[in-house]
Image (cartoon, rainbow over all chains, first blue to last red):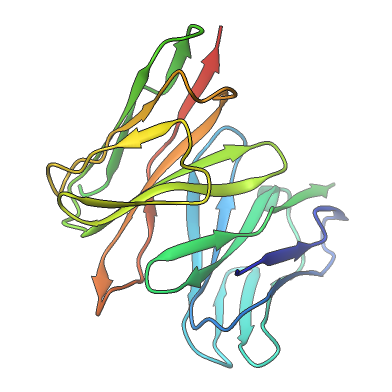
Length: 110
Length: 115
């Protein structure tokens, strides 16, 4: 059974600082997704990572995938308040399902 | 514009009552999903469907039922057998290639509360 673990679950950072969120998963998969969720809202797709070594960047966020280590990272560079949200990773299971981590609640303080 | 529409946004259920949550997509996606979100729990899969007239149970299907009579529609019924239905429900869809989903899109969600 595929399990997905994110850490940390809560992250409080100052504006301008860098930090990394980690996503570990327990069985082989070739699809990993990162989503953002604002309070009371739905999920917004951030990144789709489909191969080992894949790296994608959008603004202050960069995601990478190491399928051999079963690890993905979401790196935040020079955080700003607008990045405050909950971030989820999700891993493809079999041919059709996604298994989600519990999410990382990020708070960026001035 | 293409997307997924969930309704209603808020829903209140009395004890012993069945309620149905609507999910409609115009993305021409083959596969559709229902997830439940509780605080601190992430998302858990309730049911999914890859083709019309076929669906499979997810990890927490007890107390729920679905139908897939049309490609565009995948309604979820929360039955009286679901003892703790208060949660945020999210519908998603994806296009598939060789049976693998790649482009998941989520609806705006329905917040269900038992009164």
